Each structure stands twice: as structure tokens, then as C-alpha cells.
Image 1 (cartoon, rainbow, N blue to C red):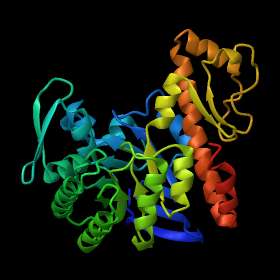
Image 2 (image 1 turned 60 degrees about the vertical axis):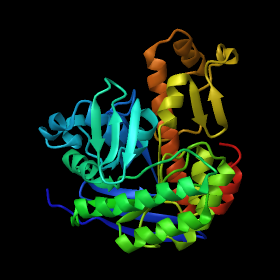
Image 3 (image 1 turned 90 degrees about the vertical axis):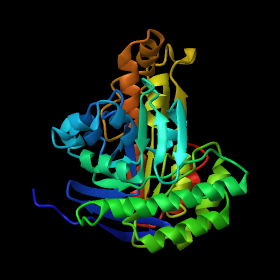
Image 4 (image 1 turned 60 degrees about the horizontal axis):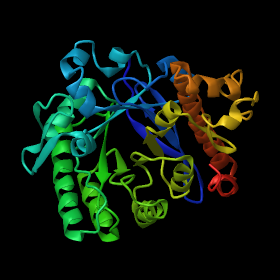
Length: 370
């Protein structure tokens, strides 16, 4: 395989909304793009070939979980995560920092050593430094690598968030040095700073001096309101580089995505489509549906008559209700696939409307509906 250089170009703009194209050695990614989350080397409940059929162009893998199970050596022995999970799509891996903070039984942050933590699985002690995080991601053979950062919980404590941001910037510099130079791969910096505008701006300015292939907005989707999240984006997107991808991490609902695209964001990931699918919540063009509700027991209409990319309309709400109320795994599988398909149809519609110059009308029609 002839390796292609990682590149990004903005093709069209509709006010702040951007239509773009990322080129990687494993394929092109149309932006704005949504990345299904493959935490354990799988999109929960959905075959990878079906993920491809939804026109997903890239997926996300989780450094922390894969490092613990099955372990990097097993994945590396097959040539990387793509071969391990039989995925031809580009893969972005996160650094593992968020999971260290949220899942480990015990963690301690050391500026030089990194995150010292106990596994949430068996209590085994690990040390994840910026250099180790990059090493793990290189072993996974990720197409896009994320810097190691600290992702604090939402807090009004300015000094606490400032210290955390400064630590993340120190680790970002070390991550970039550990990554080295590879024109066929990409490394993204992560903007931190909580809900404080000056810290967010300072964080971005710091990352720009280091110089990354893309810039992510981290530290959101941690309990803030949608209004607060949009306010953070309003503070920084107008000073983010125009020629680099912009990635909002861990977000979100369809309306979150619409609002963020409206503010110039290009990339998204979230577990919501599959997590909701496993609990009976479906996203449709007419809003959300809790398929467990008894009113669907005699409803023989499809889940969403407007879906077009995937032939899921063969299953009635009546049947899906039955599957969930009898705890049949097929129900979770069908709704997870439906939700990912809906998200990708949403992204396709977003890109089409940006290209046609009608994104603002599309945004206004659906921002409070989806």
C-alpha cells in the first residue's frame, strides 16, 4: 500500500459551518464527520461491514481499554488495530486520559511520570505517561493520535482548572516530541480550560506554538449545559486555524452536533448512538422514540420512514417493542445500527446543506427537534 500524506482542506463554507475533506492512507473522510466509538475494538452490537455501509468514514478506538484488554502485544502481533478488528476504515485513538480519571479505582497525577492508576478490571497498577500513551497508540497503528491530557470534572474552581490546563499543555508538548514526524499519520492537540474563556484561549495559543495536525476541544460533555458548551466554542472557534481539522470530543446529541457545526466544528464522536440503542432509545428525523413504550405494541409502522441509506424499515415498531420487552439481543443490535445509520444520514444532510448554502435553514429546522 502506497502511503498517502495526511491532509485537510476546507471545500466550502456556509457562514462558520465548514465542508471539508481529510485524506489519509486508509481512505478519505468527508467532514463534518461523526466517528462511531469502538471502545473495546468493536462498535458494540454492530458488524464492522455494516458500519461501513452506513457511510461511516472513520471510527474511534480507546487506548485505555485496549491497553488493559487484550493488551497491546496481542494487537501489535497482528499488525495493529485495523487487522485485529478487521477494519479497513481510518481509526482515531484517544490518549486514555479521560478513562484514567473516570474509571480507575485509584489514580494519582504526577507531572513527570503521568497518570498512576489501578485498573478498573483487576486493580493492577499502571503508569501512563505522555510518552507511553503515544507509544501505545503507535503500536495500535492509529491513523490519528491524540495527545495525553488531563480531563478534569466540571468545576468553578479557576485555579484548579488552570493547573490542570497547564499540565495538559506540558504533556501535549511531550506527546508531540514522542510522536516525532510522520507525514502519513496525524497527531491532534487538545484544548482544555473548562468554562473559562481566558484559559481556553491560552490553551489554544500554547498548542499552536507546538503545532499540531488538528485541534480538539476537550473537557466538555462532563456535565455542562448545552448553552455552556456552545459558549466555549463561541470563545475559541474563530481563532482556531482554518486549515486544520477541529474535533469536539465526546459529543454528542444530534442537536449538539448541529450547534457545533454551526460554530465551525468538523469532527465528533460519542457512545450515545449505541448506548441508546441498547436501552431502547431510537433517534429519528421526527425526534426520539422509546421503543419500550407500550403504545408501540400495536404499531406496525417502520421506526423511521425517512431513513434511506440502510434497509431497516422492514422491522416494525411492534416487533422492536417485542424484542426489547423479551430481552432479545437482536433488538439492541437493530437499534444500535439504526442509530449509527441515523447519525451518518444526519452528517450527510449537514454536508449537503453546507454545499448548497442552506445549512442555516437546516440547522434552524432541526436544532430543537432532534
